[in-house]
Length: 200
Image 1 (spheres, rainbow, N blue to C red):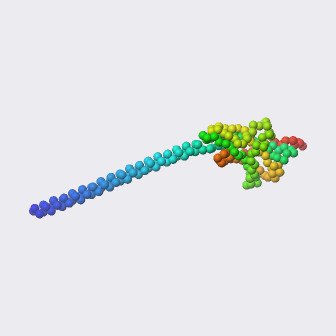
Image 2 (tube, rainbow, N blue to C red):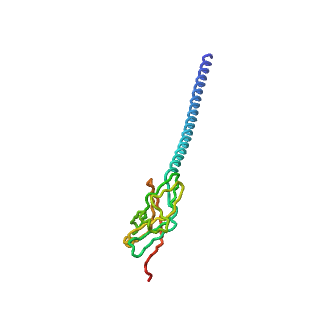
Image 3 (cartoon, rainbow, N blue to C red):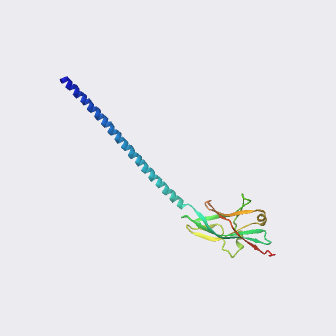
């Protein structure tokens, strides 16, 4: 009888130990899972914070970079003067500096697309400044303070023989600043003025 009771007690004791070990393993598993979840959540928060910090730094960097545009081509026309070997193009444009830094427009080009896919370019030159004195002309380099605009006329000329030989599709004004940044704006329709031609 005593032997039987002893065996029963020993069996129960072993069962209790097994139950304790099993529960301990379960508790460890739960704790490990919680630690993993917390670590993942913390890593997620760190990633979000890092991304926001990066985006903020990019925004601050970009805000300080040179950025300009041609707001508007307010008027444009072409002058074909009888006896002249040049065709003159006049564009009244507004150029705006959108950044927090001053910039300087170093080059301006008239890009003429003709015969569907060919391009002829003419660079703005200050040599034309003695012509069309009635217009307020833009001369290069054009310095523009931060968040300021400048309005004026750009005057281009191309050889008349080239004008007569091509079929023009469209026009673009392309500006380049001191940092090498470019901006293009299209002008599809240009008024034509014939000068000193006899009306028949």
